[in-house]
Amino acid sequence: METGKISDCTFSLRTNELPAKRPFSVSDLTSSPFHVFMGWAWDKLYRKSFILNNRLYFQEQRTTNDMYFVFASIFRAGKITTVEKALYYQRRNVPGSLSATRALSWECFYHALKKVKDELNDMGIYETYQQDYINYALHSCLWNLNTLPHEQALLLFDKLKTEWFAELGIEDYGKDYYKNKTEYDQFLDILKAAEDGGEPSGYWSYSIYGAEKENKVLSNQINGHEGVGKEIRIFKGETKIADKTVKKIEVNNNRIKNFEYEENCSNDIKFLDTELNDLLEAKYQLNEIKKSFSYRIGLVITWFPRKIRNWVYNKK
Image (tube, rainbow, N blue to C red):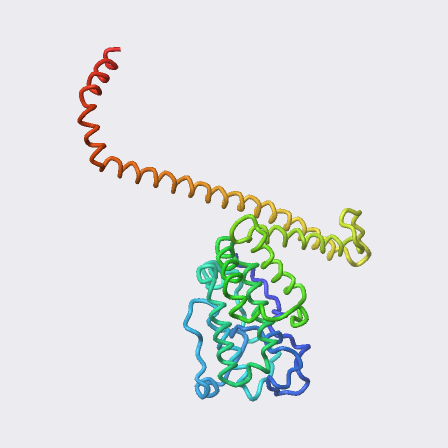
């Protein structure tokens, strides 16, 4: 829906973590380049000669095709500066856009992460930025998992726990290695759900547990102390924050109901699949019996008794 509303994109660039001097290079940053910059190209300007000389191209895939281009350019740039004036306006939530249909190519972000790692290795700087990269890789995995529709999230969940966490190096380090401890805890929750979940993947138990855990944190924030069940106290100036938190809890409660419903549907589908397989096997066995010599002999022997039985039945 077109609203005509224009708002600043405050999270596109973390200006408070940029060095004071202009221009600067990535080596001047005191924070992770993956944290300071967003891996999209729409809010950045490049010299054509810089792109051609460094042979920088978008990755050939449907979505997340600019992540490699952006970070490769940032690490290779000798001079980076910022422009305060708004030169570009991005339309958000456009139906049919690549970002709105990301579920159709949910695995692309992983291939982008791998190509960024290859670029850092080719430049001989991977060891320097390894911790920054692995922290970013974990963040990207969790963001995609948390924002995809359930059908694709389930597929991603299986990939992460069986292959991609290990391949990206995320499983190689403990909690102290990660700057965002909450994301690391979520990573552990995924591994735990994969082991303890009632279903093969553990995705649904992980999803329900995550929403319930977030509700506890939000409730404690509102109450100002531990103890979820106590009366909510809203102090002066905090009304809006509390209202948003209560709304988030309500949303989470609805998510939990949906998770439980879809988990049951998933289990019902598995049960129906099992029944269908049993029926198909029975049909196959029946066909094999009908093909057998003894079955055909039996049909010949019982032909006359069956005719008499049908005649008697029709007379009734």
